[in-house]
Amino acid sequence: MRNSKLVLIMLVILAATATAALAGAPFDGVYKSSDGDFNEGREASWWMSVFGLGSFLSTGNVLHAESWDGSTLGTDWKILCPMVVKVTLIADMTSGGWGQRIYQLDYAGGYLELSGAGPWGNGDALYTNLIDTYYEFRTIQYEAGLKTGSVSDHLVTAHSNIYKKCFTWGIGNGVWLGEGDPPPIDYPEFRENRACRRDKFGHWGDIRDLTLTIQGCTVSTETSSWGAVKAMYR
Image: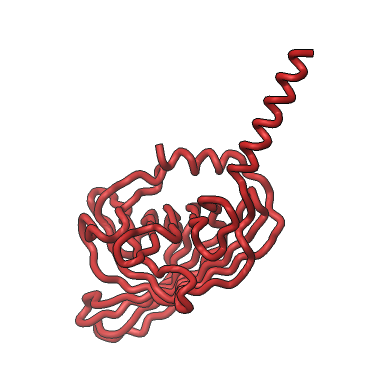
């Protein structure tokens, strides 16, 4: 009898803990930084280097982006460690080293984190979601054969295994500002893809005109992937 009561008490405690940990799925909706729903952001992309040679368009480069409220990074959202796996030249409008080239960058892996304090929040402190697809369309300006500017559009899809929610994340205006090591103090740190650890050398910029769409979906459970999320912060 005593053992039965103990088991019952433990089940009640576990149920209460689970309820507290997962308070509620994020609210569906369309949220825009241009409407003031959440903050725009900054990014820093680590360059994959082989024998010291890395570049602005290398496969293996890893993106790290966070919201910026004017004084603090990451209070609204974060994009952690998608890696470039393919770079495709889709338009070349240069002549004699002057003009523009447009590239498509395909990424794989990574996470989209949303703070529970955002307008989508429904009780959880943090919503961590797996990135399914990530495409960047990067337009680079050249003068006399030298890169003088770059702007990008991004399209991201992600999902939550826990809440069966799907996310579409659009970045309408990403602007390259510089490259080197380290990034400015008020930009995200460079991170490489193996467990999303800190690393050095790459480029950085601002990302603006963000749109986030949240809606229900049916997804499969990927338990091992959630272990990888925890491993990033060890």
